[in-house]
Image (cartoon, rainbow, N blue to C red):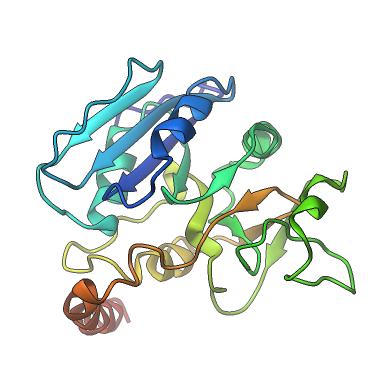
Amino acid sequence: MLGTQDMDNISVIIPTLWRSTDLTSKLTSLSHYESIGEIILIDNTDNKTALPDLPKIKHIQEGRNTYVNPAWNKGCMMAQSNKLCFMNDDIDVDEAVFNNVLAHITEDKGMIGCRGFAGMGIWEDEPDYNPIRPRHFRDRNLPFKVLPIDGALQSGYACLFFIHRNSYTKIPDPIKIWYGDNWLYGRSGKPNYTLMNVNVVGRLFHTSGSKEFDRVKERDKIEYDKACRGIQ
């Protein structure tokens, strides 16, 4: 492992199949955020896509689809920082999220993920929370929070999540697309947390929901159950 504990920035890991049309512009923005030390783009295609000369980008061209969970494992191993961010390639997130969460990514925590992702852009700890509220509500000045979360993994929790390297438990190799987040959520033995009042916009299952991956996902369930039985 290459991480150093005194490096106070975040390594961002993004697997991609280039299904997101504005990925290059997102990478450009991310590469200029001060709290981000590097962006590891795991390119699961054979397209040989050329990127602009962007600071902090490490473009790993796999030449084939290695799938998301192996990409996460590889990104964790390659990362220079112990503070890790795993991010879908089809979401938008602003710089404030990274600045605010940096101090919270500690080895006494498990995952720090998104609360009840609705694809509209804000999580609010308010009684009248409405996931259909208009986009302009994203600009409300609500206090950033990291709060403990109990119970089962919520849908969209891992669209964007942060974790310390020492809390990351390698996902078993046979599990390719699904259940990687479930594995990390349950295996660290540490409390998991949720981000509150952050600006995130995206789409659930934009890539993984494609029917071309159905057989892989069916196999993932078998392999995940098998891996869980093996640790009981």
